[in-house]
Image (spheres, rainbow, N blue to C red):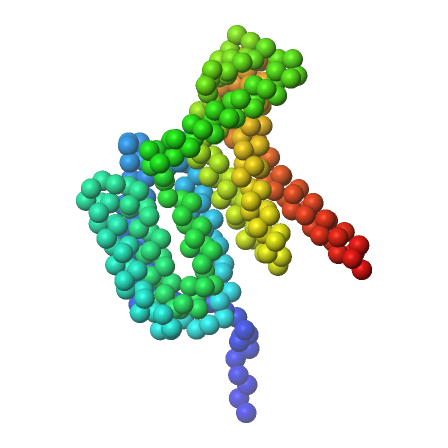
Length: 299
């Protein structure tokens, strides 16, 4: 007998796709390349070039990484499958949003159109079984879509006002000469405006995305633990924003306005996410210890 190939039969292509799906993917990539160019331009449509929406590319990269990783884990066959016919109306919805966005200059519609387009691609490739496998990466794409200011501004104003009040009360307790008028904090001879980039709804939105991503990657089997952590993400986000504003206020008071608004102002953004991630993982560890301790006490 002639010996067979020595190549492992268990090896899996990087991302197995039928030829027609590959061609359609290339077409969609070419179509949305125009949108990506607009998002990074230095004009009104270039939202991703602005600080308030700069998280968009990061959210897109994370979602696509998750999508490719989970797709490779899919055990079913690609090609026509149950629910594949649903792809065409979904692709139609995405096309409508894209055409309206391009024709009317509504960048929000263009970016949103990418989500139903990707859902349609998934349905064409593996039907509803693959869609169930990739439901979280597809959902996570929502966080890359810029949200119009008229939707978020009222919530941002509410959050900034309460963060300003909390920061003022905390630093006043420690003896700092501080007060606030609305979202303007007066500390010593300096004034700080609590802007959207520091403590607005968009920042909370990013922290929510980070918390939800952590919950999905951790893949806890306990539904109660997932729900508890999910609910705690909101106060964690608020606390992280508050710590960032305290950090900036103390920098400004002790080292001057140039230091507070210079490089360290941008560095405070990294502090914000490190604090948020640290609080999430710490609470997760606390919940794990509590559940383990409670289970042992019941034995």
